[in-house]
Image 1: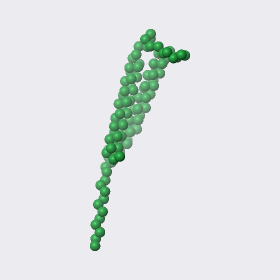
Image 2: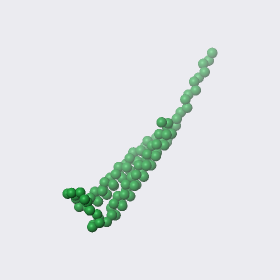
Image 3: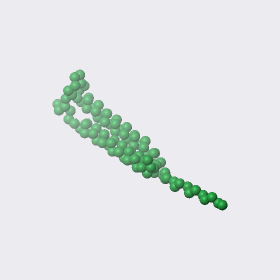
Image 4: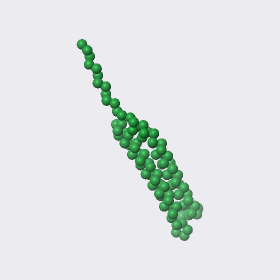
Length: 98
């Protein structure tokens, strides 16, 4: 992999991580907005109340979003460092003096 390819891959990973974090937050918002009373039921035996299940789903999605946001922040230094690196040309060998 070339330096440019690595730089591009890290930047794209960081951007994708940020977008996934935003998506997880949006999904949590949608889950939180679902009407629970009388409209949803959990078919598992011995299940917890639906409202509690939905609160857990929202909390899980928020946790995923926070972890993804953290991942994006952790990629920032690598992204920045790669921005400042440049490939060097191979040194030209000195000609032998006769």
